[in-house]
Length: 85
Image 1 (tube, helix red, strand yellow):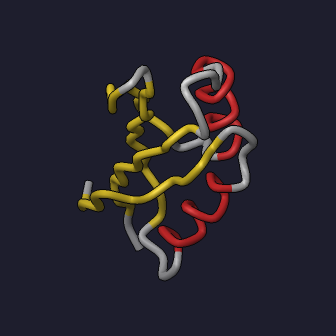
Image 2 (cartoon, rainbow, N blue to C red):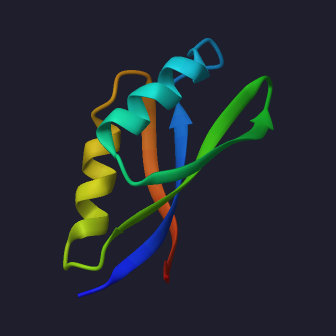
Image 3 (cartoon, helix red, strand yellow):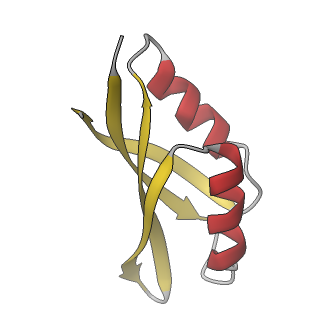
């Protein structure tokens, strides 16, 4: 079993969410995060786009989404790309 790179878009609940605190919470929940970038959406709202290296196990991507969606301040987290490393 190998590893895959996962790209996830995390939408905060509102523009008032502190993105630095949210980045910290994301790194605690998902230790494999390699990079986090802010992506402007509109009306002051910014999404966080993160890249993480995870095990290539069945159901791992669903578990990532579930973990990230439990963080306070996250409206939704969705995987937008998975690629082999």
